[in-house]
Image (tube, rainbow, N blue to C red; front, side, top):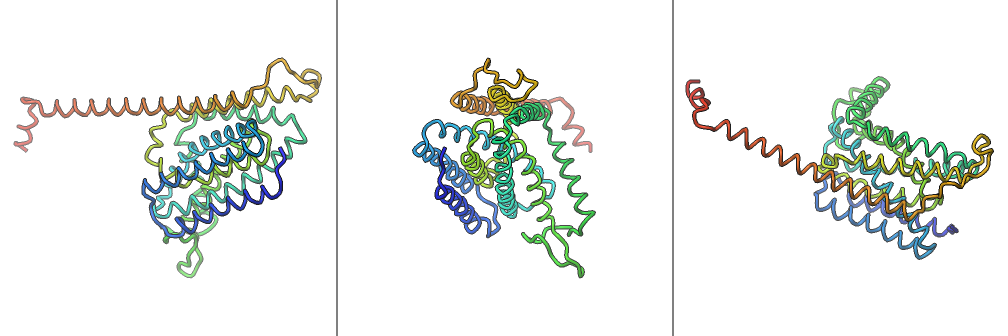
Length: 350
């Protein structure tokens, strides 16, 4: 895949332009986005990402377009999982809703920078040491099992530890001071919880990058596509947060779906590593071609299918649980108001 310098420059300029629109059009003036605003802008960013895939199709063909779409969908689904942690961090710091946009915007900038560094490092390692695919594959399979054990309590403990550590090192104000990150208080400079939550979001982004970068390398080794898929999945994350903030609890099976996707990509990486094998103690350093490599078309179909099944199953279970609670509540109300139960008489005596 031959990507000219001008295409790189144009892509970077487009990303910077979208960030500028975000900053000057929404983030600079603190406010809590409405559901309509979040939905419109989330749809716009998804549309831009999908149109970019058509650009890849036009420039480099269907194979690379499929790789981009598979990478984008995987990164986007992992980003939704990241929002669970963002919600916990926001709640732990009690960030005012009108200031949450700025926190997320800074977090996205940090994530773009960190992931770009990780992508460049990962590409260099992949180009010079094919055996890294064994490690990537094993790590993703382990991460898939970790997803199954994922709990909110773990994230809350991580967040509490971070707060305690920072407070021991630097003075922190008790409350927020608008969207300011430091203020002068009692003759000393203090940082505000606003800076703490930005650090927490940035720290979480590092952990997410460790998971997501090996995953996308399992779908494509083209640095340009990896960068673009990560950038477009992150750019709409702020709007997506406000759009599905109240719906995250309904995606009860999301961690199972992500575990299946990560495990699938992990196995795919191991199979690819066997085909490219140069490790001396595996088949004498010769390639192992017994198992056919997984095609990108099958990978894309599998990822989309898992996400659809996971989402539908989650919504069905949530709706069933809500109906059960409503029925239980109605039954309790009916029993409390049954004539002769004695509740009314005792109430009158009191």
